[in-house]
Image (cartoon, rainbow, N blue to C red):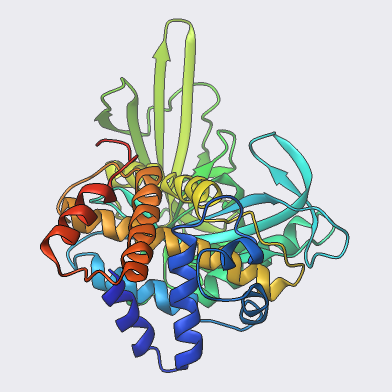
Amino acid sequence: MEDVVKMILASMSRVNKPQSKFIFILLSTLMVFQGKATFRNLSRYCDLHEKAFSRWYRRTFEFTEFNQRMIEHEVPTDSTLIGAIDASFVPKSGKHTDGIGYFWNGSRQKSERGLEISSICVVDMQANTAYALNAKQTIDTENDDEVRTLQYVNHLKETAPALKALGVKHIAADALYSNKTFVGAVIGLGFFHVGRLRIDADLRWLYKGPHVGRGRPRKYDGKVNLREGVPERLEYEGQLDDGAHIYSEVVWNVNLKTKVKIVLLHKVEGNREATILLFSTDLNIEPLALICYYKARFQIEFVFRDAKQYTGLMDCQSCVKEAIHTQINASLATLNWMKFEDRRSQGNDGCNVISITSWKRRKFNQNLMRNIFDKLGLASTCEKIEAVYKAYSDYGAIAA
């Protein structure tokens, strides 16, 4: 993968050689460091000074283009790709950090002071894995939900060309994004939205009868009421392995002001009744595909988890938004690198379970051995050295 990363960096016309060299060192270092990803600690694992990290972090780099090219190079062309967007809370102290404010922390189920990052990922449906495409910091707007939604919309607009280049047609998001502003932007950009609605969403049946009399043809045929059970007008589509029954229909969403295809999941266990309402602006999508797309959206949560634990997503010590942007995107790009290495080692034609802990340990071992062999003047092409290198690369790694 190192040769692929170098090739991609060299092919990016707007990246000069010094910046290309720094990005390669940065991503390589984020794979091997131990502790926190501060400038001083990162300098301990490479030949760059901490002030060099501080200077280069303020430079703009096209992480979207870099990640797009990696995905194009490593993911088979026949794979089904969808887009996924979500936001994550990042704790941050201090009074002078750009964009700091109060954001929702899902792990604690309350708003806390810190930063929020909006991330757009590409999910490979065959491998059931998400790869980060771009992340952007959400600027605090005194809890103005409408302004924050516009920031998510602008983020999607900036990333839309890369998504289209990868063949993405559907954007999956949770219920937070099921509003007129965001869904309208998704439709305007030429994508289909896949999301979730409240069970009491304002929906209308479409009128399918003949046109009677004069005047404007009738559009609607009453309100959809899902709170009193499953309406008979919904079409039964089958049953999932967990016992949930699937119903679907094309209806009119009053709040979104557009036709949507709804998929109702209804499950009864004893005296308990569970109902989930999913929807898509793609009126021709199969109900099972809609369910799979929305379920695959959750892969973005694993991207946040692994980046926070292993590649320094939460460790940026700078207060400047440009440096924060570099840190979060470099962290996610490093995670992509390790995922693609794992994909190569296990094959591209399956859904594999990846252990970032093992890859972190493996990369640390390899980096340490290369430094030792270089200091001793030992050639890596020697059979004995190569055998030791292979044997101890997995030292301490979790067995598959």
